[in-house]
Length: 456
Image (cartoon, rainbow, N blue to C red; front, side, top):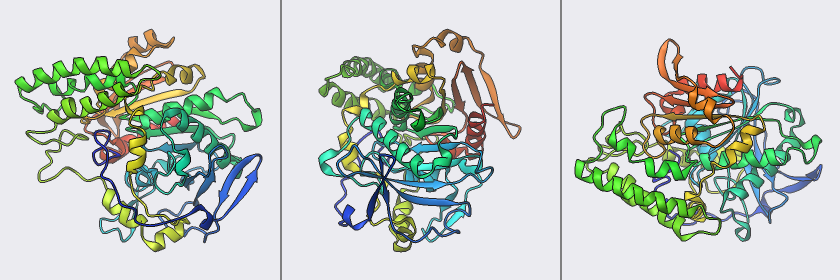
């Protein structure tokens, strides 16, 4: 749900709305060998979004030409001196985590007229301190040099690791705090890559260790080899008994899905590019498009008939709100905000069909727990494909995981989903939710992550 035509086709090109330069932003300080961009700005309003302590700022990445990542940080509403730290990586590719802050799981929601915010009782900061990070380079309020753009998950891993080192240098009390990475949609690419990089470099310097304890991915695109060709399974049968295609069209889509599988497999070759572009186009044009037209269905929620139009997830009002002068002064930014960056989307066009599932075995082997959750009304990153790749994951705990019983998830006395869990890997199918579980079932999402963070 992080893209207007997300994961499917690239966003509309946006004309430049303003000019900004790093030189106008401020000074650079070097702390413990890590560069952090310190922006002189007024202290954040105590009433902006939430009354808990919060800050907005930049961390400069020392290995990049001139890149600084923007973050929004809110302390836990519960036990800020004890609760874990969660870092949210939005999907896209190219979507801003600042959008997620105000629309998905942050401490406040933007009013429909963009005039104010209201508290979110289901904020994930209820029991965790949280960072919403704008990445890759130039996404949202983050800034970078065109000579050094990002285009793959190796870039993501290195960048997120560098950001965390810079941020933790500025906030040393969080260095030993349990840390979790979380995201949704194309975050299913970003989160495993970042976690794997952190695990790989955990022994570089004991004083700079990042205490990664778990990762959580909602309706993520991770194992493209398994997920993309299986998208058609939702047309064969789905929880809500929606007829997505006619029998004749279904037969053709099933045939095209088999052809797509071969192309996605070819894309996994290290130096392959054309097959990756072809796979994305095939998935969009020959699999997804027939499933969401005649009649129209929302690719993020098959229950939404898109009459007269598909559900809008707050993109427009978020852009209005975050481009207000008074809001930008509070945030300490001077950049025209767009919830999705079309240039970044294009830069990741080859990466799109590359699988990132190979990162997960090493993450699990390091003792980092993995939570996969999925709303069962989503079409674009559907629960069946995620369930399938979790069962096929090649790791020592595979047999035990596949042999684990499926348990019912109850929240506040209501049946909310199903859980399979073993050896650090968990998959949760969430009932009555689409692409963004925290939006459709906020109480369920909060209960789920609270259990995960507390290892319950």
